[in-house]
Image (cartoon, rainbow, N blue to C red; front, side, top):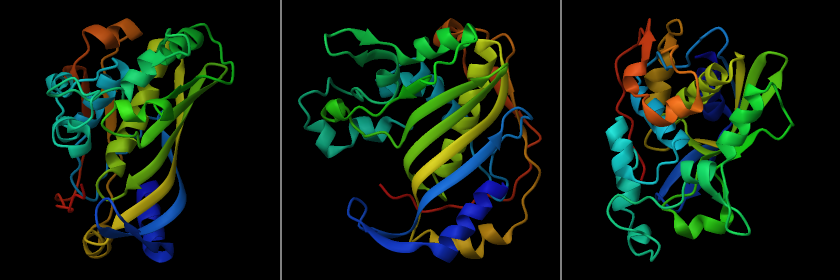
Length: 283
């Protein structure tokens, strides 16, 4: 919570107004934000100064790890986060590469699991990293990136959280995740949950200890219609202790994540929170 609240206050104190053409709104904006999560001690960064929902974030991460490209597959996991981008995005609906209802195109997990090589070969970035880490190997390039400019026209959305770098020091695994843009009141906690869960899952299936996760955001912002709620409500509340994320210890391999794992294999313990805040969402 200290990471989160410090960033929110920094945006209020130091942010500059930027007009966003996509939403038609102004954002109070800072450049370069660094957050840190103690995964080794299971300090799950679920926001406590308002009620926050974590299951959709973990379900979406699981879909990425499986390389899903269809919103229906994400719904089956328990999240509707891709429904609008797959089916209500006017530019994507007119795109000749769209395959039909619920198709997302070549975004996020597709790039992580099936990057198209220069000679038509399929490159599975995630499997390469898992295979290396399970052997105790870190070649300083244990990187999974969803950001493929050559295929932006083949997907419904550019990735915001786009690159994940894993680093192995002896028997402890670290993660550095990069995000180009972040709606702090609404989107950030979703992203925090995913960064934390990604390191926890990778450490578990690779047989190493989780260390810390480092979350780097380039453009962190609060929309003008969110500002009063953040300043006058959320930042006036005292945070509660961090809860814990409990992951089924039977999850031991990438194949497990690809096949039988469901949201029943995740739960949160000790989550105490203030009432929910209905922040406006900018499409």
